[in-house]
Length: 576
Ligand code: HEM
Image 1: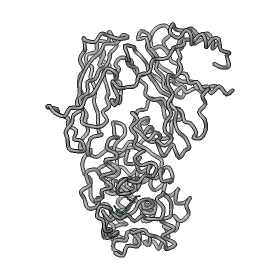
Image 2: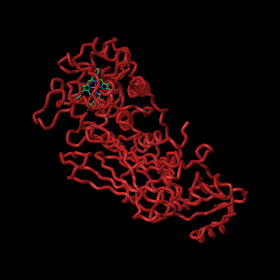
Image 3: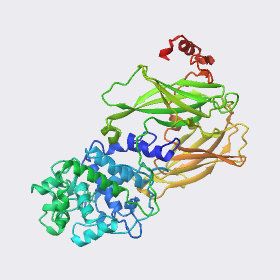
Image 4: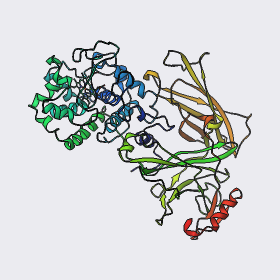
């Protein structure tokens, strides 16, 4: 079962249910709602689903090579992959892979989004696919292949003849054939700049019309009705068992459940030795953006709690969300003496359209953000949340299944607000980013981290990782060192270290390390999108109560929160 911290699960879950990467850049909005591409009017979900199939179509079940590994990126020049739709789709995915979410995972999730956004079933998602960095085998089936070759190709991929019929019935539900790629199947119109697209069936949705229209003879599917019967691959496949399998897809519910199973098998086709994660299910109350850092000359601890909200139901404005935490050092270490608490400083709501998966569940998310001041002498060891609806029901406690959310370390922390990045277009830089019009850029990051005073680390360093690089040519993976920055006075019990790194991708993340007395402390997987542009929220007031007391009103209020604290004490108990 899920247990925080699980950074890979968290990153995959954010993509699936929020449609976006951790810093808010949204992938799902490129495909949702069941979008057409401007200009060509091609179906984006159809392009993404087909891309996933063409990536796995060279899988070899005998020796376990290939599968969904993103190698399609390097195979676009081949006859079997000639389609502008593939290039466009890969550009869609370019900015999104990172250390925990591979390009192949994104292609898999892209197929899931595509089916879901066009009103199809939700295909279960697992992550952990490993990216290829070179082209793989040839062998994607072609329309002109004879039925023996087609059947053998699917057998090589690990699919039976009836699986083959099913996969086509499921895949060829959205999108169609374009004259730009297949002029022998769909003849071009008079205007060469506007390709003709003939859809597989009469709806753009993921439904079984492609099956029922085939069975009742009204089909327009070009891969059935083309006058060039050598190219009629869907017809060849559907009739290969005298229409027996395709008939079993005529019931819409059967269609949905069989497609869910078959497409799940398709996207989970991975090379031997690759193990996929557990199925990524929605984390009911998700803790995210947890960070100890320094903002405006103050040591602060930040966290956010994400709660699901049913669409069409009013958000309870009476709800209070409280974060509790324990000191790390001193008399109250691990809440032996006192427990501290604070209210959220800000509430934000997601656009219900962020992810088609969450949208189809009738939910969207509300986030409660916390910023609290921390005294480094006592620091913070663990935290948890209480959500009180003030409606007569008892408050819900979210404490990581009873273990609380444990702050891994407080020795080395990233300080985004004292870090920055700048684009440079000249000079002797090693990492060069080519933008869409062919100009060369390098992004130079000046990073500030802070280390607890007195730690005397033997080394402070970071790894910069970025696989969101134009055309997926390589991944940036650079380790660089920080040096003590004596021009910056210590703040809140922390000394500053500076370092700089170049990047040529869209999404650099940092893992920072400090070696102290033979132990390496790690601050893992920090986004670098905002840095000194991060929005600032002043820390909230802190309440302190005796942990051992059974009386919830024995609050000791710290100086800045005196008024708020008094209010709490004066309020009748049931409102607390
Ligand atoms: C024998 C195997 C297959 C053959 C020969 C085949 C052939 C084709 C052809 C010729 C097109 C038109 C492409 C274009 O005009 O650019 C197409 C489109 C498509 N195929 Fe397949 N296909 C096969 C299997 C599959 C499978 C298993 C799936 C997914 C499960 C799939 C999904 C799609 C989708 C979604 C499109 C529409 C793309 C768009 O509208 O942009 N195909 N296929």
